[in-house]
Length: 352
Image (cartoon, rainbow, N blue to C red):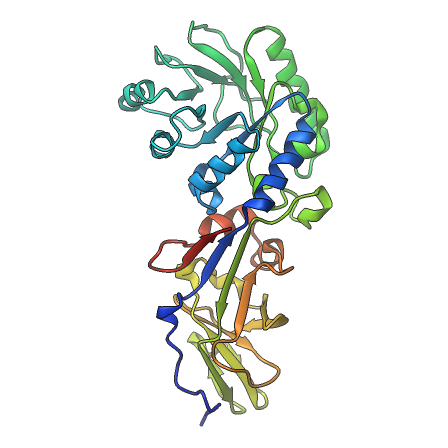
């Protein structure tokens, strides 16, 4: 049988929140300044799609604009309309494709739209996208014109790891831009802003780096960035497994010796993915391994000693980087950040 501590009754953290997500606006401001400095004379445009990469679109938008960002970029008209109510004067650019039924609300909300193929909507500022190597949205060449055209854009496919192809894209974009003077030219993403000065043109669209996450999968500090989001929970139960006992679905962890474990009330429904088994979290500030199958609402962590229920557990923050988790999961920090469920029913989000 399992042997629990004196606090063996499972802790119900409902009154305290199952976990807390903290957004550090000072770090966000520092990142805006760092990216704006890298862009020099070019404008910084803040990409706040997908609820600000899980950080809260409105919070990020307001902070970025206050720190000098000149425009906001979102993926959909719906995302833009959500921001427009709180930011009536902001320049908002919709990067994704739009349907005919969205053009009227876009005009009424004074949005700007990206277009990839004619026919183009009328009466709304347009940014035409050319495909310089991403192989996704965009034209090979801008063959038609419109009085509504204000911008020319493209997207870098591999600026995080392939400088040769990136330089080819920059050259291709510059060649096209020469034939269309007067349009605002924007190409650089976060990796482009940080690594490729020739990609600056008139504006850079900063996404992942804005949030203090590395577009290169390494330590954000290497590029002068500060993580904006931290995520913490606590031990909801502490118990000892006897040799041969297991924890979690599928009995993926079997105790070879008496083993103390803690149960954390966060799981894949909260964004702590199943493929994070084997990663480390900080328990009372000490790195400890996640063991067993991660459940929808909880996961287990191996302890080196019995600890009290309520002991703090840091999932991201306090020196523990999201990039470390993404390496274990075999994914990118973008996906991890966007997957964190910050709805009030699952977590408490605090903005500092």
